[in-house]
Image (cartoon, rainbow, N blue to C red; front, side, top):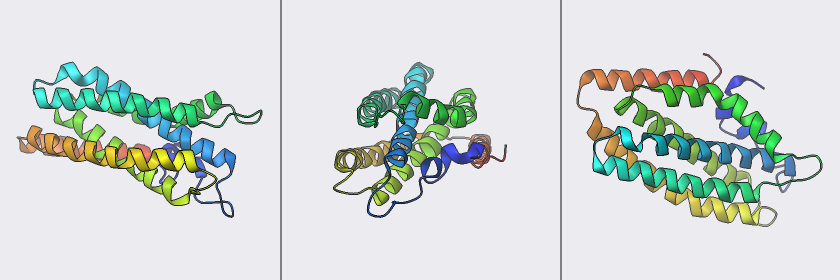
Length: 195
C-alpha cells in the first residue's frame, strides 16, 4: 500500500463487497479509518478552540471536538476483534499512513488556513468515507455499522456546512485565499502519496 492509502476513497484497499457482504477484515479496516479520522478531528479541534477569537468559531470547534470524540467511542465499540484481527494493530496501520496528513493539519498556519484543513479536507474526507462505506455495507450483516453511518452522516454534513460558513467569514484577504489553496493542495498531495 502507498502512503496515500489512508486517504483513499475507500480505506486501506477495501473497495467493495465480497459477494453480498464485506469481509470482516475489510469492515474492520474501514472502521479503523473512521475511528482514526474522528480521533484526529477531536484532538485537533479541541486544541484549536483557544486559538480563535470568534465566539462562533470557538463554539463550533468545541462541537467538533465533542461530536468526534463521541463518534470515535462508537467506532471503537463497533471494531471487530478476533484472534486474527487486532484493533490496535489496525489503528496503528492507519495512524502510520495518516501521520504526515495529521502533521500537516496540526502544523498549518493558525487562522483560515488551519480551519480550511479541517473543514475542506478532514471533514470532507470523513463524509466521503462514510458515504462509500454505507454504499458497500450490508443492511443485514453490517446492521450496527449501517445504523451508525446513517446517524453520523447527516450530523457530519451539518457540521461541515457550518464550518464552511465560518471559514468563508475568516478569509478576508487575497493572501489568505492563496494560503488556503496551497495548504489544501499540500494535503491532497500527501493524500495521494505525492509528497
